[in-house]
Image 1 (cartoon, helix red, strand yellow):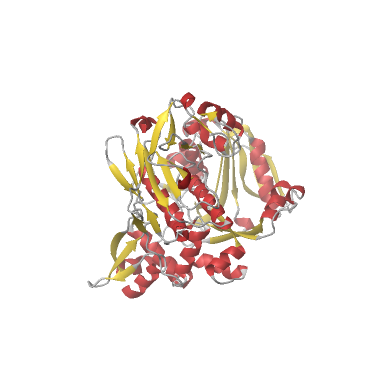
Image 2 (cartoon, rainbow, N blue to C red; image 1 turned 120 degrees about the vertical axis):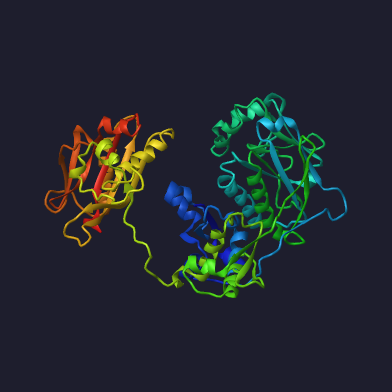
Length: 563
């Protein structure tokens, strides 16, 4: 979940209202967000680097707000304020327009050559005209690009954003690919020109840019964008050219997004221009740009597409658990930037999806927004019509893979299992974690996973003959067994639970034998004299039966005594 940092006073000024920290926390919750932390630049530096590094740092209060990963429109101050203002019904959701150049001239054009097909074949572009920056707006503009790069752009592997001062360059622009030795330009924040090959060596030690080098460094051709005079705009996805860099004085911005995923590129471009077109002389208007593909196709961007979905009020009422009229639901959705109105046919609601809401894919997404606007705390609690307990598990996972006797595990059998894989309710969290590791074993080592959840055990004292048992299970998978890591985890958990080491009122471990663990590498865990679980190195047979090849240590404890 991305975290957006905004200056509290700047945020309140934009909202036109001051809040206490508690009031703003409640507002965030109502809108489906979470105020994660209240801090300052100085506090962050003290915490991360010590007091000496924090000298002279700003004391301005920062709000760190957790935003849903698919709400790209809330990744900057502008989008956050706009969303909250519409939610509080202090502002109508704006309508975004794509316009032709004001002077009647030709749109800016970006021509893609066939050489890009093997590296980054797609590109989109747009122009923000007569924009006015302040220091805060400029910083927010840069920050939004970085947030998008880390989120929808998947660290620039899918999309890379380039922004340029249009008054320093001349179209049409050419997006091509060349051998690194043939590319030479002065990159951002450098004092001289470098070849592309030299830049790749230079940035290997750069704390920021080195993370993106792998995207193209092994390619025979590097993508590059030139203007009509041969000036380099950018070498995506690594660095922009210094010649076209934007500043506080920039009035016209040429925005290009190169990509391996065209859909993601369109969404990214829409987000940048919709968020910052508010600062143009004509707010919420974006000048179009043409993109010419190698086969001669011509596309015009940004799309800024609106679409309409129709669904019934009954659909939302039943799934949210409320009983509102279609008119009331339409008003709720409008507060979430989804302009809605009741059609003349029954309780059907027409919902307009703006270009800023790429997260709305299905009717369920609209239903979720209605629930947020209604308020989750306002939904009357009701008992579910269906009753389920824990997760299902196969006998094989317990008996064969964990080297257990099924009759000794107190497993609850499913009377009518759909398949042979789900015959008993799980008695251990360990099989699920080992299956997850097996599915991700190609990821970098070590793999460390944990789960806190319920298992189901037979219990003749209960009226249903079984009970739920809350457990904690953790595994460590690496080239070495890592028993000390799991042991250290136990000590840390007990420390957090305020349980001291000791045999009577505290916790201790003692050697034990368990068929799931390697002989001589297993210990039983006791708390206040009672056994609560085991930890140790898993038996090689268990590891191989889950299709794993490295040693693995695990801990499995009952945490109900501490709840």
